[in-house]
Length: 176
Image (tube, rainbow, N blue to C red):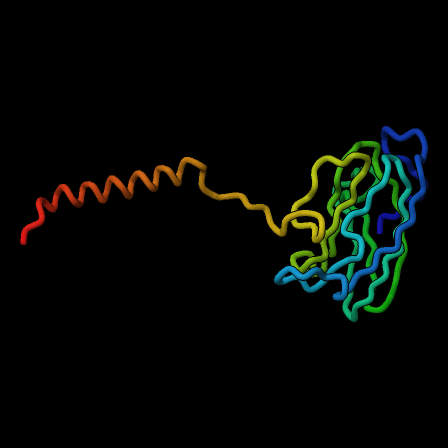
């Protein structure tokens, strides 16, 4: 869906290079992390800016899978997406042209719970922008961000000590 073989993104004067990749999807590509049951043989695809990319998507499972890229220019790709969908045991191909900017794009399967269960990758254009989190074989399984500010733990510790001190003071001397 949203295939684009010829229209150049803004900032590209010509196709810099043609790439062709065969991406295989299936349970056999899942890594050994807990909860990961699906995977792709290519967790990272690296191309030059302004490249034309052809993806041959081979689904080796019995269930439907997708290879979807997010964040592409909306003036070329409706919704900013390019995607290929293949039924179980089938394969599909599609072509798109990446923008001129160095950036990382999310690749995933949009079927319910497939991304959460391991079908996540990244498209790195040029030198990229930042490695995406939770890309199997590339980055940590989740982003470890605390919901509390850093000083909160010190404040909680101080409050516990203060409460303990107040309890001991109000209790008075220990009698036998």
